[in-house]
View 1: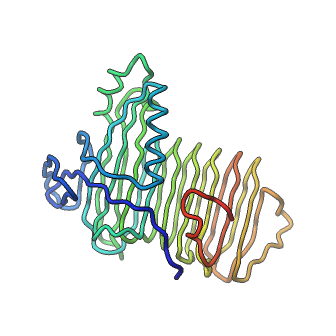
View 2: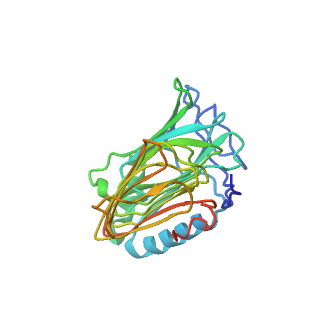
Length: 304
């Protein structure tokens, strides 16, 4: 497997269950009973230093908030895990970034940035409304590997004024499901199936592993990048309305013979696998790369 490139992440965290342990300086905690279950509805957590990408995102968000009167609150948490896990994540709106392959010592670290955008003349109301946003997470067992189930909700009457930006880092990720809206979804180093649905945001699934299970990536108005290791196989069904499809496949039996294919549509097979790779986009491109060094461009570039 090719050498991996990682962004540096080591943020201290805040926690709400006796099963959780803080990294760095401790924060106020409250046990809620069941081990492995956390209700992330707390006040702001401990601060921590950022990766390059996270730093860029924070700067952009800060500049945007200063102009539109948004109010933000950062909450940081940690949850213990043992080995590889799946993730099932759904939130009402906001960005989702999941980074696997991290040296987190059997921990899942979650940074949640809650934003209320009521406008410059309603900042007090926006600040008070942050308490109506909740993110709840639970480790569910019973399958062949545990699953981190995470849900973000808001009880505010004007739900469209809220969003939750969720940043997760963990040691090993197998399968992942993410559903959000009005936000980007970036997933790094998953080893298996991937399902992502969002709107008005980029999707990036970048992994140094060969993907041989189903993948579904759906958005509009944001670029989709699928980049994986040679050995990836499956049936590709890509439709990109008012966009274009770019491909780079450096190994394997790559067959592109369907008469429906043109600049924005791709029907093809790679290898003999029967898994489906379904991608849908509108008004933005789709990039497919199956290469020996899928991580070589890092996370900020999308060249095929």
